[in-house]
Amino acid sequence: MKLTRRTIIALSVAAALIVGATTGYFWYFSQDQISVRCMHALKERAEGDRSRPAACDGLTDENYSLLILDLSIERSGLGGLLGVDG
Image: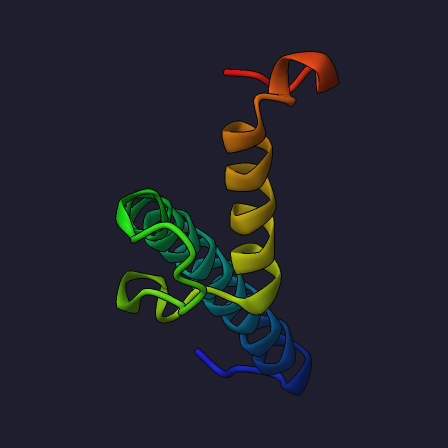
């Protein structure tokens, strides 16, 4: 079977798309796992401690900021008023 240039390009593009999709899925999944561990560590840290827990290593800065915001809303009791309680 002789592969034409068009076939080789199509196979290469398909392989790249599969690798990209798989990598994106696992990156997202790992961010989800890290955020669960990070939130637990944030809830357990001492009051007033502003350091980033080691359990949050690998979490993007944006996701870390969202966890801090979520925890602040939860602790303030405003979640119910904002419709994000629970």
